[in-house]
Picture 1 (cartoon, helix red, strand yellow):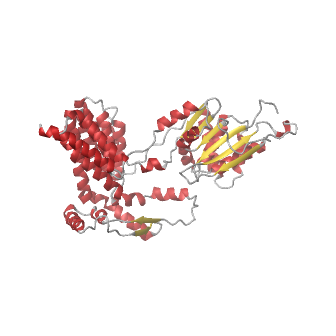
Picture 2 (picture 1 turned 120 degrees about the horizontal axis):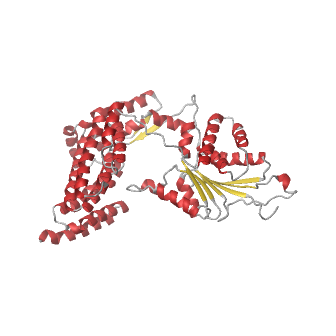
Picture 3 (picture 1 turned 30 degrees about the vertical axis):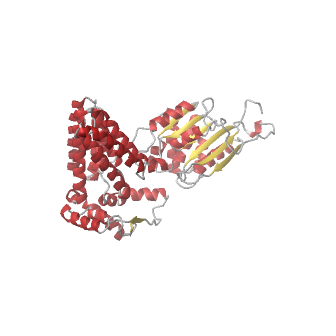
Length: 511
């Protein structure tokens, strides 16, 4: 064994349930068929998304028969700066291996998937806490000797198999190990179950790696109440919007048509057009309209009990659960949904005239937030599934509910404040539009966000529009209050920030 010949070190970072162990076994089995000495170890993660399960392989790229009886010494763990190839089934996991020092510009090739499985800080953020995928891809490219970023998850969905077979094809396509494609296919064929799907996945990953590009993304599903002609007409109208706005508007139209119906999507488009006019008058080049259109689509598709029932009874969700459990067609799968609605959730689907007095009585007696009804609905049973479908069918009556009326008034107030602020300060208008980022989720999360949102409107936005707060500091005051609300769930920092802003408003009011 010469100094120039050394084992090829491969680090695999996979999430729980993605078949990382099977992937490492495939690679080792293929190497063994070629006579290459190989060794593999695994390092379990803490949980499916608190840490990846990593697999480390070392493969001697020379058949054992050519080593003259000598046996290579291989490591059980990866060394800092000693990894030749990183295979990551998730984009953030690839960057985490970079942070650990296993990826170096002078040595490491990276093959990673664009797929994301959000980590806990991203999920727990009070606003949009997601990492920027573009920056993650740039980070991989900057620290690796060579990188190949593919949408491996999309390829796996197309074949109905797991991502590990696609990753194996991408590994074979790199050519870093001289193993013929036929050997990889033979190893997969020994698996028994889902052989055909795995072979399709392998070939798709191989072709993508050889081309060096991801496949074209699949079109979004268009499951909504309304004909294809209505959808095409709305999308055609949206195409006349400014270039910075129309992609967001099209996604909003599709989302709201699926959420409610075609008429609701048209209401959204009309509101976006109004904000485009405000944007043009303020000279913001589409930035205000784009920001407002994005938040408006989310606000108009608020999470009420009807929406929850619609999502949980969606056949696509049930099929996805079966696929995640790897259940065969005849395998029984039991699904139990846990609900704990309170008085406000139940009143949200009532007419406003009936809901308001009930909520008033409940508030006087201290029942709000304290009285709940625990419910366990078995979605796998006919009775349980029909309960959700009946609740989801109330979608046609949503416009007559108390929650819809309250959300409509809040949205109109928000849009009017953006339009009024644009006449005074475009920067202030943008900050008011971003305040919608405080409103998310449902239950206690929604209540906390909405309370902070209303407090900012009452103590900062309204005084600014009434000129009781200097316009020169109004935009920064809104931004500071919003940042404080997002940074401190307990509310102490937010309260202190509002108090400081009110002190600055007093001299202006006296003047």
